[in-house]
Length: 215
Image 1 (tube, one colour):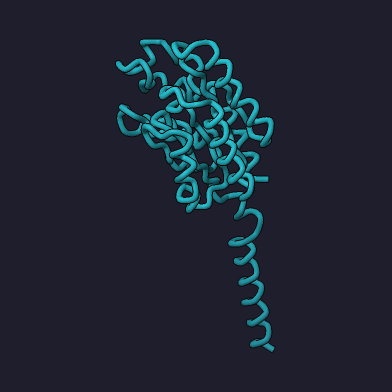
Image 2 (tube, rainbow, N blue to C red; image 1 turned 90 degrees about the vertical axis):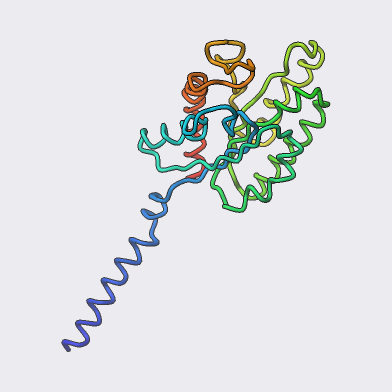
């Protein structure tokens, strides 16, 4: 009887440990992994280490008690086509959610907005196919390209967000663009102060993204 009772106690302990290790509470405690797919704005061009947008956002999430990590998959100079070509590689870590910040280099090079939209659509399609919720960070065309280009380029993001059910932050550089105090000497890339403003403004949407990833 003692042996049987001992085995029953051991089985109960094993079951309790298994529930702790694999039960719903463990899943809730697991960090949500966010893929930050983007350009130099995501990578952190010209910024001191630790001041990049993904790092600042990750710190804000932790400070809010949200268990999440952000994988910086930003590449300086990348067009939407470049990002599409490396998307499968970027998904190798099986992220739970994605932030997509692309199109700025397309516009700077004057590429056809239709091609940008086609590439972004393909990226969103792939992410949807593997059930990854998306926060799309929009961009606006440089105004020196003329009103016709801007009128064609700017609406891309809202249209795609609607089509794919993605969260949308309309203009990633909102409140920072063209302000010398918030940008580096090139007038294009935000400095650490600018990054903090961007992070603060998009943070509510990042919180929504994490919530979607947990469902």
